[in-house]
Amino acid sequence: MELATRTQGTHAQAATERVDADEMRRLRHALGGAARPLATLDFWQDDHSWSMFSGVDNVDYNVAMLSGPNASQSVERVLDTAARHGLPAMVFLPPGGESARPVLAAAGWSHVKDVPFMRQRPRHRPADPGIRELGPADIAAARDCVMDAFSGPESLGRALFNDTVLARPDASAWGLFLPDGELVGCGLLTVGPEALCAWGMGVRHSARRSRAALSLVFYGVNLAAQCDPPRPFLFNATEDGERLHLGLGGELLERWELWTRRRWVLG
Figure 1: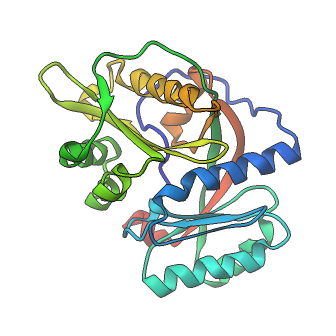
Figure 2 (figure 1 turned 135 degrees about the vertical axis):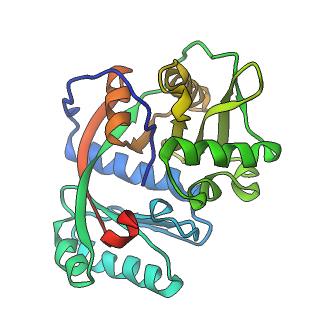
């Protein structure tokens, strides 16, 4: 589930932000609520867990986060949804989700890596004049841009940038354009009751050494600050994205186990 930029950033000490158990549970829940706008196929949520299926054949956009006392039962629902619709999927297990491990392992899933769960707080930052909101006319360019940024398949762009998502009042896509009109960076924020969720925020390989990544992050925290009330944006970052966000004031909240079938992530 690539929810942050793959761009290069400032190296920073990966110190975990101290958050008490109740607040961490609220933040995990808030991420699920903010992911709901992409759940065009299936969504469910309880006090400890959530599942979001976009219906697109890309493992990054059929996702669940399972924790709490019922994780071993909740995982059965996720496995059933993935099998019933023939979709690749992934499951995040934060601390407290360990009871789902044997169920996933028995179904042939593997713990492939750990990923950071991060927060950027809302704040006003100068806007890059090259950034603007994306509309239907920008879909093809945005898909091409995010595929280049993440070296991903066509389904990656299709999951994020489509007429259905861009028409939603609780989703906002934006892009960074050069003076010649080339789109070199883009991202999507979906809005939930308590938080925003950042998806596919990245820049083209050709723009890696520019300030494009900074511009995208600053625009995102501005959007978060403009919400009524202001709210943070939450995400799971790539390795490069973690370094970038830590260097820009982001907080590492905790690390989650990522479980999936290896063939879905290795091709």
